[in-house]
Amino acid sequence: MKLKDLDVRKKIILANFMMIVIPVLIIVLVMIGILIGILTGAGSSVTIAATSKWAGETTNYQLQLMIDSLSEDLVENKNVFREGSTLLEICSELEAMGVHIAISDGTGTRYISPGVSPGELEAQANALHADGSPSFVRTQEGFACRTVTESENGVFSIVAAAPGFAYPAGEYYAYDSLKAHLKVILVTVGAAAIIIIIFTGSYLSKRLSRSILAPVRKLGEATAAVRGGNLDRPVGYTSGDELGQVCALFDEMRLRLKESKQAEQRYEQQRKQMIAGISHDLSTPITTIKGYVSGILDGIADTPEKKEHYLRTIYGRACDMEQMVDSLFLFSKLDLDEEPFRMERVDLVAYFEDYFAEMRKPVGVKSGFHPGTCRSAPVLIDRLQFDRVIANLADNSIKYRRGDSCLLELWLSCTENEVVLEWKDDGIGIAGGEAEKIFESFYRTDPARGNAAKGSGLGLSIARRIVERMGGYISARARRSGGLCITITLPMAKGEV
Ligand code: ADP
Image (cartoon, rainbow, N blue to C red; front, side, top):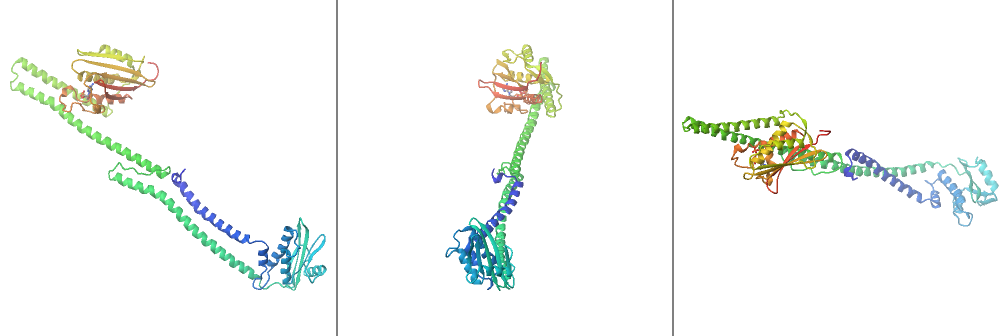
């Protein structure tokens, strides 16, 4: 998982954690470096270096260090008493300060400082109260020390004594010097820590703020674009964190807004088209009626036959208008969801068998019903409304036939959940791009709307609303062989018919 995809809460926690961990790690490394620097100089050379006096005095620490070095040497090396060994070197350093040393093991005295006997040294040590073992005594009377060292090379006892080796007045110098060293170390480490913390903190905060501010800025720009009416500009930020999710949601919202704006524009277009359609389709019969009525009033229809012809024409146009107003009323009731639907279970195989048996067709119109593999096709429909849909399809197939003859067929197919009806005719058909448009209210493929009596353009839009209210959908396609195919899909009703 990329750092970019971490959620903001985790990013903040991680950044804070790193702000602490990175400096601590670096400081620990620096400290280890300092310690290694101090410790790698270890060994006798350091011990010997430590014997150089602090402010002209030998400190207890130095004495202790030197005696410890003798013990270490006895443990670590075998031939410690050979000429030029570190042990003898340290002994001579001590002797140069006035300290006498005796080293003995189980076999007897192995080393004794020149000018003193083991017995004298014992007595001097005892006189200075270094009479237990181990002990380290430093008083104004002198210095004495005893240690016992056990090793693979044997058990060694070291006795050292220096009467008159007074407790130095300047012992604290060592402490002061240590303090000075510590000060330098602390100031160095402290300064390094502050610099490291500042750099790590500012680097991590910059990265954190960049990862938060970048999407916020992009979101701001996208919002400004939407406010300015541009619904095509995406935010352009993808990531798995919360801000990425907000940006994705914003994009989704923008697309929905775009869709609803387009739907609104379509709706507005349809509304204009509908008003134009109504006014056109009503004005044509009104003009006809007016013309024929004035013909009667002006005495143009001067024979009973003419009068009857005029009156029948007026009656016919009035019927057309009534039909159109009825369709319009049904259309608006369906639109407002005010048309009641009484759903019942109907087997479409039986329904269409009856329908085609009873169908009244003009001369030249042939029909065929093909139930396919459907032995029964149970659906939940409002029978009256469904009759309307089928009547409209049949009317259209007859109205838009080629010449006088036509073949209209209904094919059924059943799946586990759906019943699919395909209403096919071999009429004049529609152009490829009109398959959706013919379901719009008042749409007619005849752009001049020449023959209003032929149809109002409301039939298929009413059919779509009815089918959708029954849980199905309806579509159209131009047939390759000419003619139109209307497909209605309805959900299969569960259970026995
Ligand atoms: P109308 O009352 O005009 O028939 P419809 O809504 O039923 O209204 O149909 C809309 C338009 O679709 C029609 O005007 C016609 O141009 C076209 N149309 C519908 N059915 C057919 C068909 N079977 N063959 C060719 N065109 C059709």
